[in-house]
Amino acid sequence: MTTVSLKLLRVGACRHLECMAARGGRWSPVEFPALCGLIRHPTRGWMLYDTGYAEHFMAATATFPERLYRDALPVNLPAAEVLITQLAGFGLTPADIGTVIVSHYHGDHIAGLRDIPNARFIALRADTEHFAALAGKRWRATLGGHLPNLLPPDYFDRLDNADACLQHPLPDWLAPFVTGLDLLGDGSLLGVPLPGHSYGQLGLFIPDADGRPAFLVADACWSLPALREGRLPLALFINADRKGFVRTFDGLAGIARRETAVALLPSHCTAAWEEFNSDS
Ligand SMILES: [Zn+2]
Image (cartoon, protein in one colour):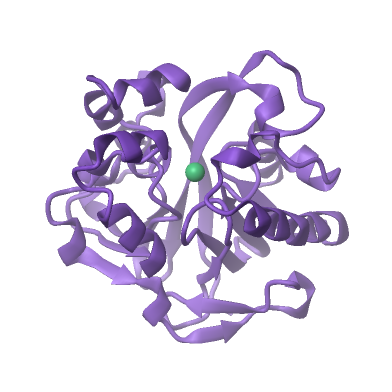
């Protein structure tokens, strides 16, 4: 099995009511970090899973209607959390990133794509098609958390559909998720469709991330403690398909309770981020 290294970077945060992420949470605002994965593959080099926030987000939400997105979810991006700054801490420039795996097209996951000049991008076709169809429909896009201006101008020339990758069985213990998409062809990074939150959300299962399995699950849940307790978010209405979201959430909740060895990594959970960093 190919061992890859995985770091989880916090690239900005937004504020929102805690209860939106988990029933039983407080009706007061808390910080939701925007996390992204920095992956090093032994032969394919450096990759990202999402980008978190970037200054481009501020530019893309400077005027109405896009401004509504920023007003609803106020963003804080301290200088030390800027992705380029954090990459420099690993001795990297954005040009060193060869691949960005895009979980889905919400602004807090793709805001930094314009800063990555050389990478190929990988996403699920259904999500890309939904996003592309929003071009010019500013209100509809904004209300769905989509900011088409965040994409680099040559994005579609550099995009590969994850769907075109060969299927690869997932370990039995990851049921009900049984099949992944072999993103690099060597079994080291397996894309896992996580239906519900968006039209084609792509999770990432890494069988060996520095010696342990990791499963980046994007926005399939927002709080790892709530997932373990089976507490669904209140904000089900923001998902593309509520029933699909609940099915995916229930599947992940089962894994969270049964399989303590796997690092389950939602994109916006401070507890998961701290747990992962204290273990690694
Ligand atoms: Zn999202």
